[in-house]
Image 1 (cartoon, rainbow, N blue to C red):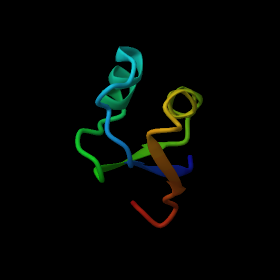
Image 2 (image 1 turned 120 degrees about the horizontal axis):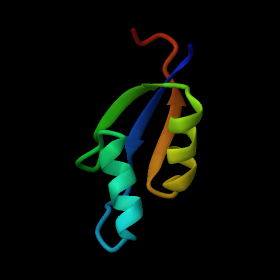
Image 3 (image 1 turned 180 degrees about the vertical axis):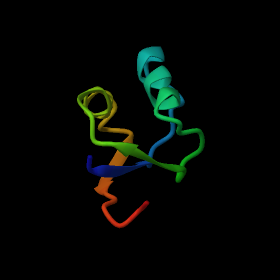
Length: 63
């Protein structure tokens, strides 16, 4: 399964509580923090929900 790297690029101050919870469930805390996730439909749905707050890039070389 492919891997993707998710980074928080904008603050969650002032956003909807559902968006804030989605960012936390992705494992992101501070601006600039990153996590590597599997490219699954559940994760892609969460990323579509908070696409204005995060950046996504392929992490195929990350183990």
